[in-house]
Image (tube, rainbow, N blue to C red):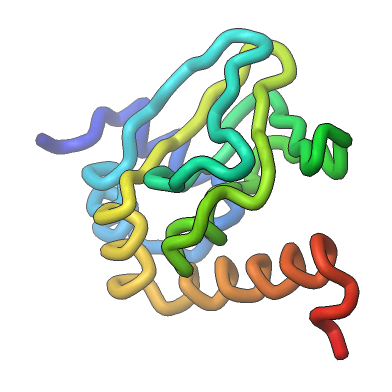
Length: 141
């Protein structure tokens, strides 16, 4: 099913997708679901298996590790890639802070995105390295 004009307009403003053509945005739109969640919605739980990748469209998401807040992500930022790339359990818990709009890709959609769009794959991989270093400073040695 083709994405709506509203969804395509939304996708145009996601920094991760900058530089994609209209045709590419249509393809991404077919892979992603738009989801609105209320305040306090747990998107993923530390230690649980991961099956989704999230791009924050509006609102924010708090990231907790070991019961402590370690980051707050906002519009244009994304999460969930670590578990999907490495098939490991989630490294942190992510909870919406206030009403939040998200684009959600399943594991298959995420892998398609990575294979079909090298520029996006590069951005996600760089973020992955940054997050691993943030979670484990010893990883930089």
